[in-house]
Image (cartoon, rainbow, N blue to C red; front, side):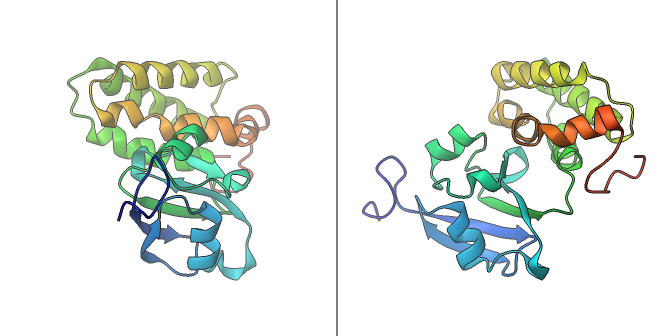
Length: 200
């Protein structure tokens, strides 16, 4: 088993491949294969010839990786450097019909609900970030929201007591990092490029 995989990430990993991909289901791959291999070779690519937009790895606390990250090896260190995590092995594929601000809001809703409430950074941080994302998707975003989200993400990830709180900001920080243009469209132009946010 240890002969499979990479030097620091041994063996294989089972992923639940879901979303906008031809072949969904559980797939077991050697550590170190690329996202591209899993999504396009095993998953069969995006249905209907649509454009790949992002892959979210690691379950609700994972990060969203853009097309430029498709050749990222799937191992613990590489995913962390790219702004995501291995987590529970979720791998959700998104096409050009997905709004990344709305996606961040969706996953943050889950982590906010799952917070036990014991520590302030997670209890309050997830709630405040979700409040901001809801304002942005309702057409009430402000320029200052970029800095607010960044600061709340940093405080939550560094100050939370458990893994849920420490990774809860990943959907927000990764979409801000890789899809900032969509946030700017929502906040500055009051439009949702994917036509998902009905208020816009």
